[in-house]
Image (spheres, rainbow, N blue to C red):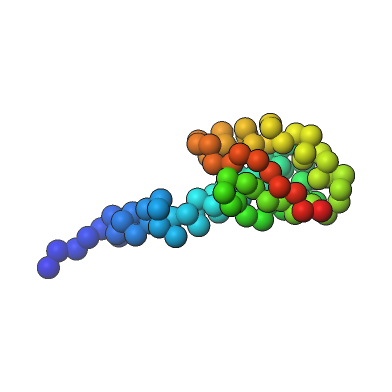
Length: 98
């Protein structure tokens, strides 16, 4: 009986086209967005929560219209920083829920 290393099995199950693979990529995008918002806005970032990534659009829930406006003004830089952290162009735009 031969054994397959666990790492190989996981790589085979979690390819980029599988549902689980897409969910993991989305979770990575959310984490990167949280980090970028924290780096750019400091404590103000606590008022904004990245929710999900769908069709290359990151949806962010904003506690106030003021933080939504700050994110809107800096959208290009935020998207560039998120994509730089991910090492690929995963996010094209940001959608705001206030």
